[in-house]
Length: 364
Image 1 (cartoon, rainbow, N blue to C red):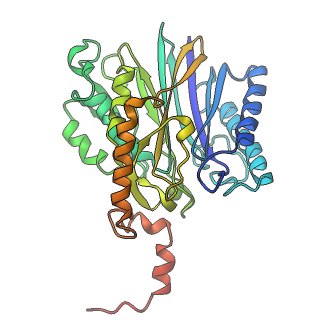
Image 2: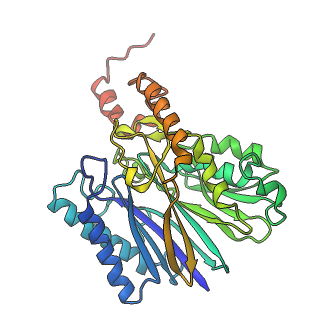
Image 3: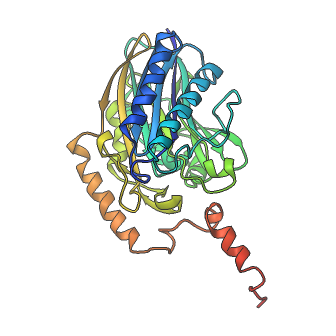
């Protein structure tokens, strides 16, 4: 069965501040997708949240970039924004950068990750969702999952994974892409993946079968809007088991919190903390950045689940490490590397400050 899995998210109002999502907003999202299911537009759906982001997980048979599905998501976000405005939630409709739907939500603010595939006999899917961070947050985990044998032993001992994977990497500033083959081009690829503010892994493919293995959202809100409008809060879909990494290999990178950009006002570096859905309420300095993981089995397009995969004491040490890293970075206040470098600050107050001081800089 050919099925399309679409994960589309948007920040349409925070409760309280930027820390969480109001139950009424989630309820409205569920009502919208329930109606779409009854009309036959969707095969199945699940509505959830990560921090203050509303996450729409949908299966259907309309293919990627379907205007029907994107219009459904857009209308859902608009309706939920009305609820957010009624409740006077913070920054209601923040990610809706335009007033009218144009055929796709891409470039309009919401984040999108979609993949179409032939459903396997046992189709295991993991949906990764993050809050208070940017699209490049998936670079390190995806590299470890699909290219690092110290993380993913299947690359060494599983015959159906030994040929490796291909990485589609996007230059989000110049709107260009390149394909790297692992393992032979790992060193070349890492030159780019190590700069996640500009280069982001969009998709990963099995080298031998050419099947899609993972796909992420790479939208950069500041680049779309030309100003600071919050961080991008990316999502990522990863297929698991069989010819793809096991569930445990996909989750393993998050046992060591890596540093991502985002956090308070989208202007700081902080540790990515793996948490259960109920703990995805970033409040300390509007953070630290959070990542959640929901696991599903697909059965004829139906979402069997979810399992809240970070709701596990095995990740408690990672959470402790993230808090220790947060303590240290907060001591640096407005100084780099806690605060983002100046080129990233172009989308905050930096332009206004420079304009105010224009003419006061003198030649040495």
